[in-house]
Amino acid sequence: MRLTDWITLAVERDMKQQLTKVSIPNNLNFTDLKLARDADGHVSFDWTPIEKICEESGYPIEILKEGTEDNVSALLVNWYIHHKQNGGSIDPVAEDLFSEVMAEEDAGQSVSYKPGRA
Image (tube, rainbow, N blue to C red):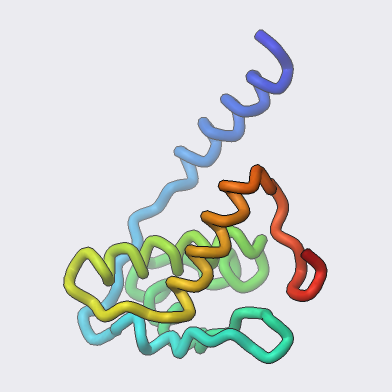
């Protein structure tokens, strides 16, 4: 087995062990995030709904606030997908972010550049 294959398998195995069920409180809506694109191109949102989700799920907020950006991104992406699948309204900022990711993948770009640096 090649080293890269072994590393990939090890990471995937570890990630599966770290998966956790997330529970979105019934009184929360995706729009409560107030997802926005700042003037500098960065994404901002209100952490209060994320904190409520973590509390409801028994999940430490530090993993999202202090961990890699991928942690909170995964939560937001999955929440938005669930939101849309259940009849939720389209969020223009989330749609814009999805479009960017798809364009990067189509171009074979494996790295997201900081706003203004592409």
